[in-house]
Image (tube, rainbow, N blue to C red; front, side, top):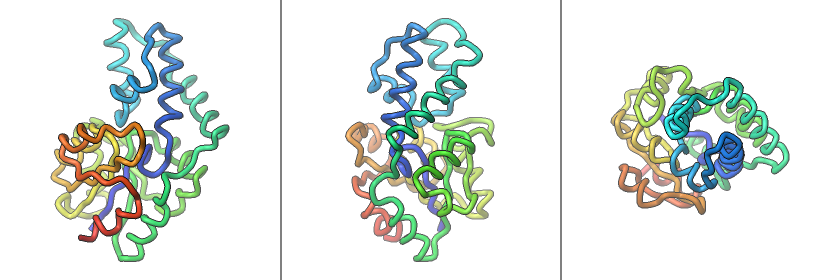
Length: 215
């Protein structure tokens, strides 16, 4: 069995910080979304997909350096906070690996970003380079391409994969790929009803994860 982890919000507690930076950058472009609204509309999606949604809302293209500047501010906020791992996730990953399960990461974020966030929180070495990004596939979440790509690279059939997600597009992507989905809803901002409606099995504490995967 393969356990595929999303990164932001599942491994690292980055969503509030990242979306605060995103909301601030959008405000400068004339789109006055709250952090909560930014999370509701964009969380779990690739930057490309986020850009398309924002540009449709604005009715114009974003500046060419918009995402580079925003990412620089986001990285600085991760250093300043500092960014932390989701509580209990380190022990959960180690327990799954000790039980003989394969693990990897599949995120809408770039590999470089994951190297930074997972490195900053001490999680990078847990995955030994088994990290996949939506930049490696034609379509990001909610399409299944990324999770299917991860399963193919790890030489595991989709029906033998469990995905750990915290966003609705992520849950939809895993379900579309024929995979079981455990939806982490332990954060205050979690959209519990929407995650369940999308087909995720809700859980609120990473201590529960090994038992849920192995049941």
